[in-house]
Image (cartoon, rainbow, N blue to C red):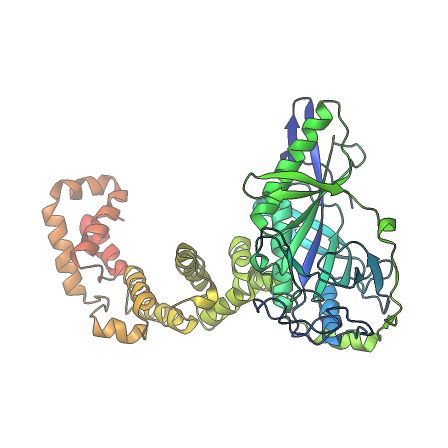
Length: 490
């Protein structure tokens, strides 16, 4: 689907604005204990060549056998992308020089993939929404890994990854900026993680993207695209697109021509460089793999998989906004990871959802980000945070004391209720004690007291002084009421 070129997405060149057009081919490693066509382990980080079967090593006479679990994962992913599931699909041989794939070809899918057209809805800051069309999803086997830094004269090959199942998810050229592309890959990774079909760990190579970039003047036909291979971080995807778009614009403005090619992104320089001329489909000489029968599914099988799908990010976001009254921003932050959403719901159960969201988004996530931790490594459990909110609601502690209790639980653990009791952090609600503190502060600042009668905003300063005098333990509500009464502020 083509989108109108929005001014904010245009890149200004020397001779006028250009529009960047982006399509992505995402390779997602299927979450499975065994490989696509063999029973070898898919565990990451084993000794080189320790997870290799005779099939993976392409020993003579060894035949591939399809892993039904990987097929089910591909179908579940397709359903999560609102895509058409093809009940009949075919595995093909893709002929290409693979130095780290012993059979000398890749078993993939070409004309008849397992999943057809779908979509991913991407919500951007400011309310912009982009619907990214999915062209197809097909299954294929991954290649091994060539190691060039082990010996001055030889390259070594590790086949542990050879034969691991990949889902190649191909988008339509619907993205128009690096920001949209980053948001798309973030959303896609979130969907895969919710489904449990790919762990999304880009640093381990289980999710990587080939990024197709072209530029054109607004309203003109699509330009010639260049493909940037194997980009393995969301930040690098954005940098690669921005650099490549500028590179192509400069060539066009100088009267040159863009040649279709495959390029690599150099993270150290932030630049792309030429790798090889881009192959076309006919260069791979696809043909149906004679060792594998066509894959035939029943609608009942697909329906059973669909019935077991979890609630996905879009549905969860809509429910959080509707049922909990959250802002779209808070909902987006909370549903980004399945674990984060679950944590929030555990805290919010039976409590003020907006207050729970505020604490999870600001206090918890802020601290996690500062220390480089994930929600799974949070020192404060949902039960502990919920207990802190219960203490606030009961009037046992103030919001300020609650943050102190949160810090203690973060550092030392423990039951917030017992911490408050043992350390004497209970909020002062004794009106006579609070009144004495208020009188003392007013008496010490008669000039400001007079000014506050004319400028009621100064009451905030008095509140701060009283809270300071009581060690933050006074009930802020009681302090406010007493100050207004004694200063004669309505």
